Amino acid sequence: MKVPGRRQNWFQYEPPRQSIHLEQPMTESSTAPNSTLPRRILARILREKREEAGISAEAARRAIGVSKQTFWRMETGQPTRINPLFISHLAEMYRLNDEDAAVLLGLTEESQAKGWWHAFGAAIPKHFDLYMGLEDAARSFNSYHTMLLPGLLQTVDYRREVIWAEFPGMATSEVELRLELHTRRLDRLHSRKHPLALNVMVDESVLRRRIGSPDIMATQLEHLLVVDRMPNVEVRVVPLAARRHKGVVTGNFVILEFPRHPTAKLTDPPVVYIQGFTGALYLDKKAEYDEYRDAYADIRRVALDENGSHELIQEIAEEWVR
Image 1 (cartoon, rainbow, N blue to C red):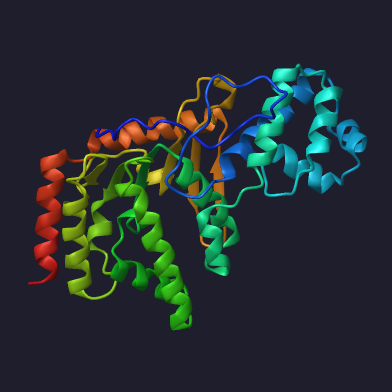
Image 2 (image 1 turned 45 degrees about the vertical axis):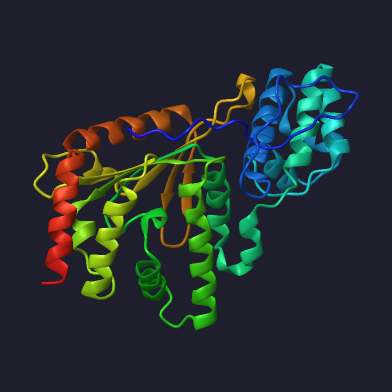
């Protein structure tokens, strides 16, 4: 597995001056501040501390005077505006020490930041906003694909055809906005400060499925060969003749893993992302992650090695232009 250079930080964070400092600042990023991870970590710690204190969600909600919906969003990491005074009150209610309270307040501040992709507005489906934040913060992307290539490996022409397949009547200006967003996402593959290890397994059928013209397909497959030479990218092909494997029942999935933080409780657990037509699943329970990690390993055992994958991709690329 190819691994990019070591990343230095996570997300920017300076605790209040009167509080106890964390062991080191969170990460510097090549992109705009990203609220997704701090929001998720804040939610997880709030939920854990409340349960440790033996306080019900209803009692905590009433103590800060918010609706059930707002409190649910606070404890599940959903986008919502959080008043720091609420967090201070909950910290007292849960009997947290100064250091833990400072961490929560710092995370609260970070959770209000907006990522660079928010500038694209409606070009991002609601269910994809969370994914963008996770992808932007991840250190590794391990995936399996049976229908289409992942967005991070798609050429602009291939991506345009996918957009038209989903939205055949979309205005050209809207299509171009989505393509601009697509191009911005690709910056992660070339970032030195904020590298992403991209390990992708694609079913052979993906390479043979026509998306656009034969020339578009040939160019797309040649692009796969080019990006696979990058030190942080690996593309492996699962041949149609492969023995049975768990991928036939899992379908497409992406496993996102995040940088380790010296303070263990501030390391976000891996997330399994499964995209659907009208929504998406985000699985972050350890048992769920373990199932998909094992499935990924099983699929990898039947995938072609690097040379075999290159040879098959090149062969199919040539078939597209014959």
